[in-house]
Length: 363
Ligand SMILES: [Zn+2]
Image (cartoon, rainbow, N blue to C red; front, side):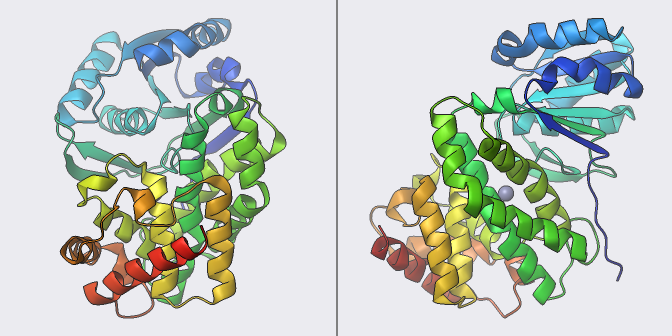
C-alpha cells in the first residue's frame, strides 16, 4: 500500500489577517457565501465585509442554525445556489467548518475555513462530521479534498477563552503518540494510505511545540494577549495536529475518548480534555517508560488538562461503568486496533485505572 499525505492547499496564519480575507478568497471566487453565527457576525462581520469590498468581491452573510445536519446543509446549499455564489466561507468553530466543507463539496465550489478558536484540529481536514437535527452523531462525510484555504487570525483566537486553547492542546497532545503507534503497527491513516515520514515529523513537531510553549501560551491568553508562544500553539493545535492526525493516524487516545462519551458524567468536558486523558491511558496501555509518562503528566498538570477520572467528572469509580467505557473504546472498527499490540477491553479497563492512579499520584 502507498504512503499518502494530504493537507489544505494554503494555510495562512497571523495577527490581523482576517482583514485580508477578501484578497485571499478572490482567486477562488468573487461572490462569497459566508456562514457564521450571530455572535460571530457581531465580532468580525464588519472586518470581513470591508475586506471583501476592498477586494472588489460580493459577499452574502448567512447565519448558522447551530447543527451540522443534512437539513442544515441542504438549506444552506439552496440559498447558495439561489444567490449564485461562487465560494463558501465558514467562520467560527468546528460545526460551522464541517457544514461549510460539506456545502462546498455538494455545490462543487471551493471553501475557505476561518477558525475563531484553536480548540480542535478539525479545520484543516477533509472530513465533516454529520449530526441529526437534534445533535446526535449520524455519520462521517469523507471529502475528496482538504479546504482550499485555512485562514487563522491569531488576534481573534487569542481573545477566545483560554480553556478552548488548552483543550486544543489536549487534542494535539495525542497526535504524536497516535501517529507513532500507527507507524509501529503499519496501519493505515485517515488519508487512505500508510504514514509518510513527513507526517510523523509534523506530529513530533506538534508534541515538541506543546512542551516548549504550552504553559507560556496559556498564561498569555488568560491575560488576553497574543505572544510568539500563542502563535506557536495555535499552529500546533490547528496545522501540525491537523495534518498529524489525518495523515499520521489515530490509535488509542481517540478511541478511549470515544469510549468516555458513553459516560454522562464526562459530557461537560471538551473533546481535547478527554483526548488528553486518553493519551495517558494509551501510554499505560503500551507500557511507555516512566520518563515519557512523567513528561506527559507534567505537561497536563502545567496547563490544566485532566489526568484523573475525578477531573473528568467521574468522582465515584464503578467497575461496570469503566468496563462500559473500555468496551466502547474497543468496538470493532475503532482506531484502538491501530495499536501495535492486541488490545482487549480488559487491558483498556486496567490501563484506565492505572492511568488514574498515576494522575492522582502527581496531583
Ligand atoms: Zn481529536
